[in-house]
Length: 64
Image 1 (cartoon, helix red, strand yellow):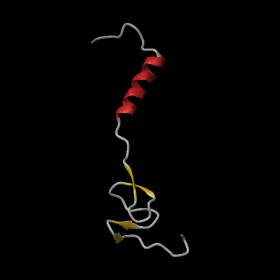
Image 2 (cartoon, helix red, strand yellow):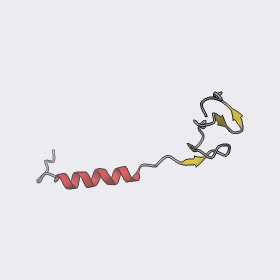
Image 3 (cartoon, helix red, strand yellow):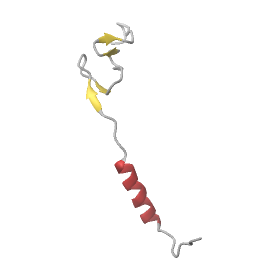
Image 4 (cartoon, helix red, strand yellow):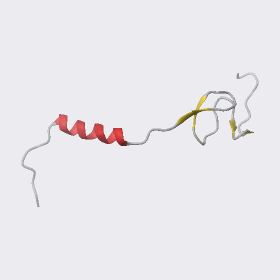
């Protein structure tokens, strides 16, 4: 079984981990067509409770 000759430095380890994190996909944030608040794609808007022109979550009038 192979054994390493030299230990990797902390800087090299951190550099490798940073490159891996950079390659992960970031969530796409879009604007809600109804209230213009930022929201995640294919999710119910947290501000108005609508998804695809339908009210999914009823919002109280006093909250806004």
